[in-house]
Image (cartoon, rainbow, N blue to C red):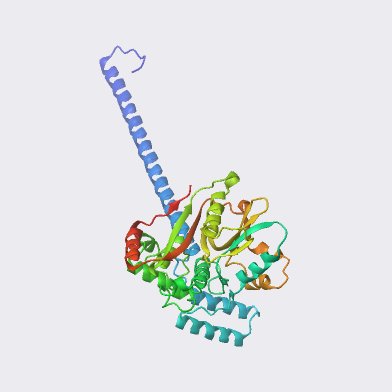
Length: 379
């Protein structure tokens, strides 16, 4: 224990006892230090978990707000709130507020869009423009006629998916092939009505996994929808369609040339020939990427063989779209529509393409297959 030399046994025993007491005290101290350290670590871990859980809750609430699932109301509530804000700022007179409120309530009661953000006749105007265009377009393929719908005070910030469905539907309603499918849809439905139609598709059994994401409810919310909801709705109406998933870039610098090639094939198949301008009977295409969706209404092929999509964006105001209707347009307004390969560089794109009508048996088979909804992946 130590170097002390004792000649007396009693002194030796006392000295040894002192050493033992000292060791016991040190060991006890060490134990208390260890317990204290463990307690501090436990409290620190608990606090960290609490902070992480709080952050997760805040992130979840943020996502709920972002995707319209925070129970903050839907189209009607946002429309009224935004109009009240316009009145408070002096941008809208009270009489206009009450008139627009009455119009909105009537529109919602009948489930029909009020048409106030609609622009018609653009495809026809484009056809005339391209007939006279002599610069750099070798060929252009255009979809069947389609109306443009812009976001309104009620759906600004979240309604793009619904507006693109309205665009697609406006084209299908002009095509006699789909008369039987759409006999109960004589007019363009309002956004709340579209939400109810998607819920009806879910109740039929379409895409149960997707439905659970929204707790089986869209009506009265500002929930964003995407390709899966558009597919379920169209298929429930017996409209044949498919989801194509361009799940990763297929060109340099994050571009998607395969997407452009697919659209070219979609519009040009069965429409080959030497004509410069081909106004096809093909419906427009729903195009989705993270955070936004648009409608593909055609594709240009330049003289140098490069491709350029023509897109209707629901975020583009009606006043801007109406410029495309002006006679003798010099083409500058086409910047609103044109998207080259280098312009589409999101990580992933999905499209929903319509291709005919389903029989009742085919619809049932599609419903069963949507229990696990899959898409065709390219590449």
